[in-house]
Image (cartoon, rainbow, N blue to C red; front, top):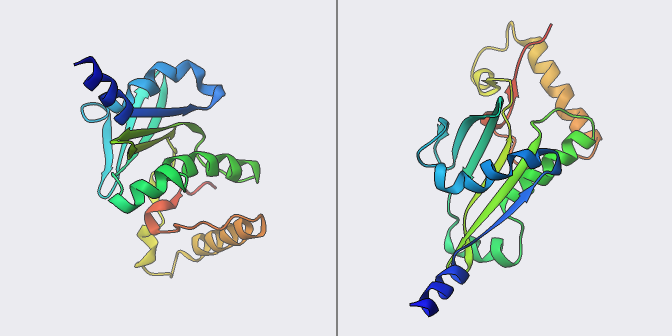
Length: 178
């Protein structure tokens, strides 16, 4: 039995990377994989699941990426960084270049059978609740200022070397401020 237990431990493991600014959330982050299914408020449950947790007076956003198809499990384990890892690091880069995005708290990679299984990206929750999607199909008339601001924002991102590789309507949150 001990031999099997050791084998299971080898086949099932977890990697956690925690932003040092959020060391006080270490226990919360460590417990997430076991608590994710039963806790938190679901804000999206499609290909990936996004939940918001309230903890220590913070609104924390957790995105759990679906288990990749087999070939991608191999790629993300041995050759390429996971989506959670890239989201974590990209947020630091976007902020460093002067743009607003929720601050990264941590990422988790779960391994089963020696390959990447679920991965989680943990950040502060964005205060903006509306998606640019509302305006993709809607009339431009009356929304010219928003569309101009969005185009200028996109151009500024590109000028600073940021090329968003998943600029889908649900990935851009907006708020009208003044």
